[in-house]
Length: 306
Ligand SMILES: C[S@@+](CC[C@H](N)C(=O)[O-])C[C@H]1O[C@@H](n2cnc3c(N)ncnc32)[C@H](O)[C@@H]1O
Image 1: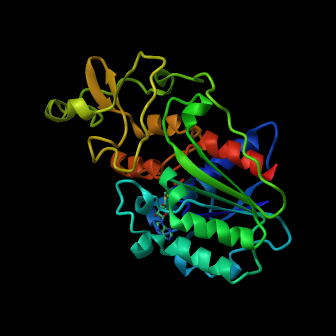
Image 2: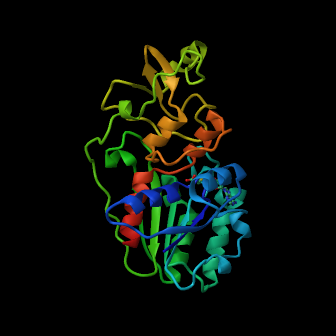
């Protein structure tokens, strides 16, 4: 089956697929095309998943020509920008240029096109569930014959010590879709299990005492030796905004940020996923903060295309 990853970023979905490929119940999904406007993301994507990156805006896509293989099943996965739908966003979706891409898909569906995929997945913030764009997208998909299922899920329900509540839409042109997600699984690993060695004193990961004094009461802090601790969602602003962008680790009596590798492990990325040389921590945090929880997406893909 062919996978087209739209708004692909660094390839969270390709990473989820790579893990499924190794699982006993193998899903035969191969990435055929990955589209994003961010060239830095594209470099990371190609570094990890091969030469399939296409740098263009989604709204400039000719939807009639997206379908890669006419003769084999195809899955399109979309991760449109969340900011227009976030509580912190402006909430004026129709005027927001970042919504043009999703609106172009909605308009295309309204034309009752051919060239539809067999399966479609979409991820966004939970607030998307109550946005008019969600209603229009669901109506458009149902009108062309898709079966739909939706869920808001968080990796903590899977026993992963990292919060990342997200809305997911799954659509199938083949059969009914049902989503079965684990509920309240016991914690699978502890934060200590994902940590690198303690950084040296000069590391930029350590927080300076002035910032800690100023923001202490608003910082989400977890202890390195607390095996039940759960980290907050790491957002793209981690490393830039001090509060509400992710957790801090108390280690050796000081506070530090989680390294990008530690964040990637908490999000479920495998050791096979790496950044090419030359990407600062800040850049890696930004890209990871825009990405996905890998185990959640794997469970969804497993249920959708089995
Ligand atoms: C929420 S992130 C998705 C990240 C991705 N799922 C991952 O695993 O990294 C949204 C992505 O959409 C891209 N993007 C935003 N607007 C776009 C547009 N109009 N056309 C193409 N890509 C766009 C951004 O560069 C960003 O990488």
